[in-house]
Image 1 (cartoon, rainbow, N blue to C red):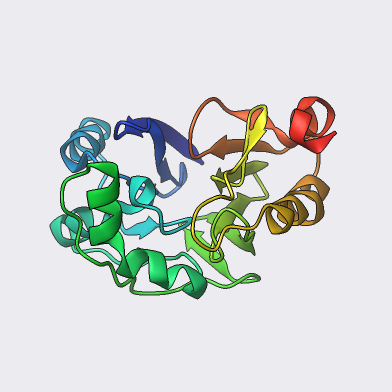
Image 2 (cartoon, helix red, strand yellow):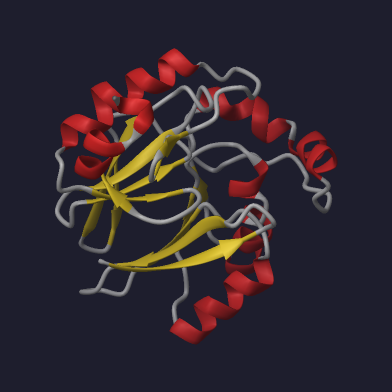
Length: 209
């Protein structure tokens, strides 16, 4: 699998364009905003996406999803159903953070732990990792040892839990019981900031000591 990261919005959110090297199937993960920038990168890469995948319902991860879904005529998939209240409240989120108006979003499909998504020959396992938001999911490409972790864990940090329905204890349980057991050699792409490995965070992340 190949990928490229596109920092979007004032929050420098890592939107990912991912594609199957063997067959070319392409997806967008967490298009938080700046739809025009994302379209240009896709054009430069000569990639046409077939789906949009969302890790959770915060505006800076979903803000461009509706525009891109309409433009490419593709489905929006994820997150888990418990983030519906956040997607319903996107107009209020956009007002609160000073973003352009964002209409409520209804995904074409919710995701549940244990499900698998295919992208050509690439397979993403779905893990439900609540705490930052109640319906947060992560996407694991086990074959390539790559994890799209959204805002659950960062290099040197963990996700905020002071948003509506956030829960710090639940967040730490998600990290300790679902992510760290995946193995030290798993590289993760967080929602913000640089990449890291689960092994590095297990030994150096101050929140995990």
